[in-house]
Image (cartoon, rainbow over all chains, first blue to last red; front, top):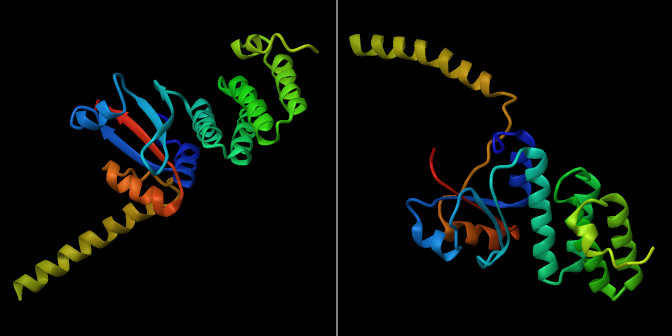
Amino acid sequence: MTYPDATVADYISKNFIPLQINVQTNSEIAGKYRVFWTPTILVLDSNGTGYYRFNGFLPPDEFIPQLEFGLGMMALEKQDYKTASAHLKSVVEKYSKSNIAPEAQYWFGVSEYKAAHNVEALLNAWKKLRKEYPNSIWALKVSFVKD
Amino acid sequence: MRRYVLSFLAALITIPIAGAVIADNKGTPPAIVWEKTLEDSLAKAKASGKPVLLDFFVPT
């Protein structure tokens, strides 16, 4: 359903080295990445370190933003804040209706703050989160921020 | 002689079929080319600067 979609195939080919592992015949690798259910999707760096994962089938309009978010979170953890902000902003702007968008907005604020200790950027991002996604759990997490 | 005639007939049948298959694939979106091993994927990731998208699955 998802992988034959032209947009998904194009996105993956442009942004990733795609690898499929059958857990039934590769239990050692599945164990290494603590896989207990399929599908499990991981974003790894070139050392094989996992930075983002999710489970379950998703349609293309949710799958692509998850991957974009994963790229953002990997960059954030690696302290590449410019790249992180670009990916996270892209999730919010291109896939604003996706379920991952509120979390992307949350971490976008964090990335902007960490890039230059910019408190104003953090608060602005979180205020926008409360405004745009008021019913998300991520808005609840920033509910202490004053308007 | 008979062998050459059979080869010629086989070519006559095969070429139009191959052509039709190629024509049908025109406009088909490019499929994802999945790597088969973690080692090869990580080597390609290092060379290309791209991360790896790892999909654990069970055959259905």
